[in-house]
Length: 422
Image (cartoon, rainbow, N blue to C red):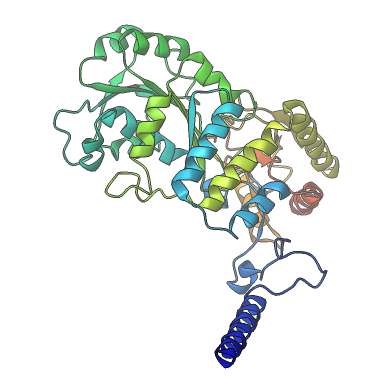
């Protein structure tokens, strides 16, 4: 009996030793003596993959990977990557926390603002009909499938709604709007940045509610101001979509859908990780959910006044570097709704400074470091509320990292001085 116990003890000790060795190899003890939860800077895969790093003097554009996350958000994402959890429990808890912080009935973290629009549309189409979540957009029988929209509010993301099998009904006047809503209307959609429509937000909400139809506001890029995170739900919009990776500086592939509790529940029914639903491919990982929550905590700890003061200081430092450029005139411009932060606009006499704004942008992009200016530079189409003027350089300063404003100013000075002296 003693020998059996000894053998058992021997093998138990071996098992424990091997387990300790395995764990030790998997999670090496940090050199600084800290815990394994301490942040570790990984390999630079941009360098490894030969991907060019840029200075973002453009703004929160998706093709430029939008914003960078503040250190507290980066740390929260890294820590969340270390532990598995139950995804449904995390989404539910995150939604409840965000709803409290953002003063609305309910919330859900989505895979970007376009995903929020899709899920919001699906919620309105399938509300109270779980089977319908598995049939749209192919089988729309018996479902409300019309979305009323101002003609001026069609935009590059119409497909986010069409993914749900809906048909748009265009209106241009308040009378047309009131007449367009019928028993097939699932949703009244409002594009928040389109302040050129004929029908106000207040009237849009009032008419929809009088007809018993929910309304969704796509306000993707419309913070700051910080208060917009609750302004539109408190105005009466049943659902509001935001991008998480723009002004809030969460992970790029996150968004928020805020609003009525029953509609958010219906959106969740149409979302990953549920199978065979329109949102199955819109998966949000645990790291991104935590990152979005952390970004809200960070964002709500800031102030609009501090944001604006810092962005104006960056503009001042750039313009100081350019004070000797002949004929150059600078102004600070704040778009009225989307990307509502100070931008630097510059114009000059191209007969004196012999280079076009578009060529300036090209040379900035091709330099080292590579710098991206706002896409409205040299464009007659404008961008995100910036004036339509091809004879302008636009610098978006709000996504610059500390010290990068000086680099931008110096590079602009080099390019424009050379052109002035040519």
